[in-house]
Amino acid sequence: NAGVMQNPRHLVRRRGQEARLRCSPMKGHSHVYWYRQLPEEGLKFMVYLQKENIIDESGMPKERFSAEFPKEGPSILRIQQVVRGDSAAYFCASSPPTVGSPLHFGNGTRLTVT
Amino acid sequence: GESVGLHLPTLSVQEGDNSIINCAYSNSASDYFIWYKQESGKGPQFIIDIRSNMDKRQGQRVTVLLNKTVKHLSLQIAATQPGDSAVYFCAEKTTDSWGKLQFGAGTQVVVTP
Image (cartoon, rainbow over all chains, first blue to last red; front, top):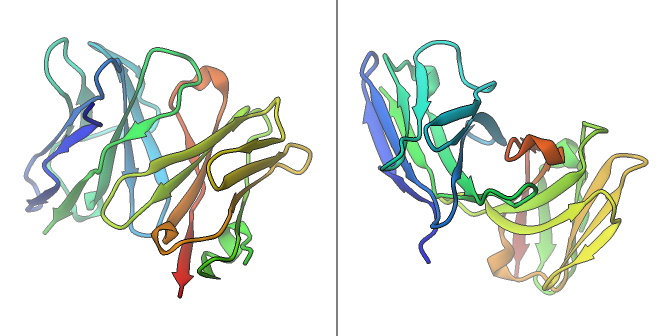
């Protein structure tokens, strides 16, 4: 039973380029969450999605960031016109549609903006 | 060894000793708490959780204690092993907030031989 799969593991982008991060949840999990982790800090919530719906995006920056979880395929976190401050580890987590279930995290995508 | 949240971010423990990692949580409305372990280059790994209607829960070599009066959470690891070296995060949430977790800053545990 595969865990949460994220790709790529490492992504390097120049300032102004776009970054696309992908996440496939665990089998049977219909809820996806994205978190960001800056060096030596805890994880910060960004967005919570269900299939084709954004449920809570209160942690997303107002500009340049967007997320989707289409009916078919992985969830995508998209960062347009990246800046150096976007350099971080981005983690995806998933859970089943049961209130109170623990989140299972992927191994993250480490984005470096040069 | 013992640590206290943000004020002592590194805990050095001798192999075989017990570890205690402390966490002060912020939201009095939180009713679900989780401990995660994060090894270098990996994502957080679920260790154990506890709901607010409990004050203690045990797993394999780990025990979580919850004191709602002072909003304090602790993780005890028995007979610490080299493989326990990692950063440990506590996380809190309210039941109706699904997966919107509030993470603490973490405690680095270093196990020495």
